Image 1 (cartoon, rainbow, N blue to C red):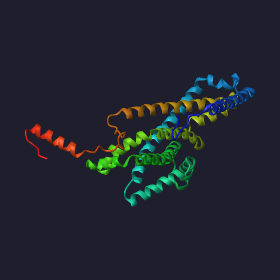
Image 2: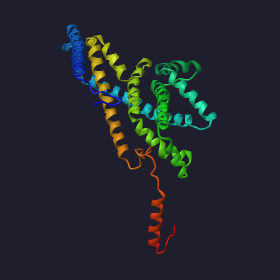
Image 3: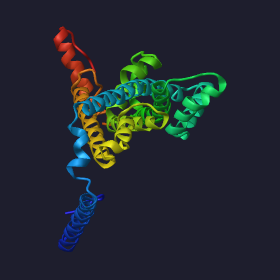
Image 4: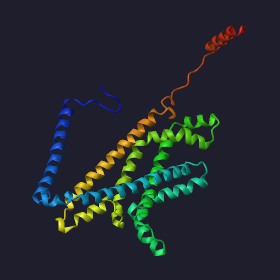
Length: 305
């Protein structure tokens, strides 16, 4: 049994896939085992290295650093989504004099790395007499970059919809703003939700770049804690704890976004496009005659053919 896109593997292919799977598991297990062995051999699992995490003040500082990370992410995520919508609508304009500047802005913001944005805002602006707090440098840089990326995501989602969706909206008498707001954008957001979630996860992780411009977020405190020689310089334990917190935050974000996607799919306001490409049913002359005769009997009048 086969199809155009997929052929069911035969006995030899099944055996080969099993061998490759076993080899992959063995390689991954060997790499993990080697790392654990080196950590143990260098004393990274000793009580002295982890003694710093027995102090309440350390966990309080970790909690405060995590809140600063979340504060920067929340502002950057909201700003990036708003900027993405604005840039996407501008790039989707039918007027070239509107579309061209938005296209240039999107391509420019996407081409500049986030860290370069942060350096320009935090170290460059003071040269011209403008000083900015590290928090705002991190947030604005994340908004600029991720907003331009999300603009392309929204644009791709809108342009992937069947053309009939837009034409149906115009046929109902909606303006372009109404078609975009009520018909196109809800469908595009639902279709591109996995990509949007992935970009928001990237935004969350990119807040770690703030430690380079002295923003006291989670990675900044982990680096500070790991450099304390008085408690044994626990750089590896601090990195492990920080990495675990980042993983937990990303998993929570993905879970919340998945719940939002499910609610959006069940929402009655979401336009269904399953039958958008279905052919229209033709009405034959015979069916029209029968319908006319039935209408004439119902009205008490006769219809001649």
